[in-house]
Length: 610
Image (tube, rainbow, N blue to C red; front, side):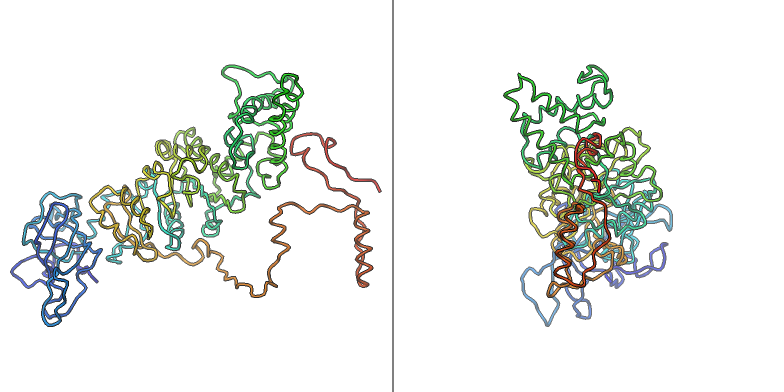
């Protein structure tokens, strides 16, 4: 091990005293060059007995003795000036060190050493470089009394815990970046568990595009997907509603203008059925963005009435196209979470309470699974949820603390402003810029930081950078680090599994750590613990079930006559076939009427008499 253990935290032992006169095995070399930010140390690759040792290793911390202070440096390069190896004698090497800060002993005897970032006294030529003491290494990463949680151990010394200041990490937002397969999701699960244990008042909403976190947080999490989500269409703002209607394609301005005029009228009809289409003006006026219930039937009725007007002759193609879009979206079974018949009533308090866990009933985490949701509506839903999260924290006056965790954040916060959905970007940017004032925090998880909106990334004050292979992504992370430990990021492309470099407000100084290992059942993606054997011939694949999920519609009930015809044909082909008991003659009902809030007799066919 590179760092020697010490017997106590009191006075240094004889092995730790830096007496130049004694034969100290801790001495590694001497400073031969220093430019203010970096230093070069002259040393030998072998020890006194001529054995090649691993005392000099890239990524390790060392200390330079300056008497009353000890300068801490990070080894980032090692080499021989002549590029030749002498097997018969000692080999002189040059070690490049980045200066991180300095350690001072406490004023009182036995007090802990104190670490300060920055350098007040620079190493002189000939200064002795030592292996760093355990106490000094602990002082480098000491959080100075800030409330902390342990998330792993130092990569340099596994006996020293890697701690982060959890309050600063949350309040100033954080980002976890790393390529696929390096343990990014496992790190997220670990951080969530540590955060919930230390902050039981915190609510967490996870935007999960891969449906993997719910099973890894079974005791804390409530799963919400397209089947269990209730998000009424009237809670969508105009831009968000138009995104749903146009299925992610470019909107038609004329149709959006019609919606802007008619949605307030439909809302007014719901609130005052006898008032007609009169729209109030003034402080109590309704707009297309006001989260007030209305009926799709009333909106279509307004479109029909406008098409019937003589002066709207030229607008009829636009109105007809808009009506078709609305009817198509409302009848689409994939959009049940928006247009379900029971969502016409004012259920906003139930919707917000279920999504944001108010009250939480011992489960403060909501995992919003997006894998089964239509891709063209994901942007709108994320925009609504992000906007509600900020508004809820704002109007609760700080009583409600919320963390919005965005997995694969580059999907809905892309760097290119022409891509993605503008309202989603604006809602998340608002949380990033103003959320910490009101207790709304943002967690960003991405494998491509180069494709993420730089405004969002710049607002994250704590970073956990795992292995990154792409040069552009590495450059983004290098531009985000603000202290003198930029050389640490040179290891981004070669770090091991579960390893990360943490820097920013949540840590004392840039720290290379290894996350704790979670039990297998708590690792996202493998929480079920089931190893599914691949199908060889395809006989064990339930194709009918797959097709049923693709269609996502209930099977229609058959009429009596049709059932009898099928029974007769089956009976003719199969002598052992038994005819089922008679069932009522029912033809499929169209739930268009109930979805739109109309009377049951308006649409659809009813049950027939025998």
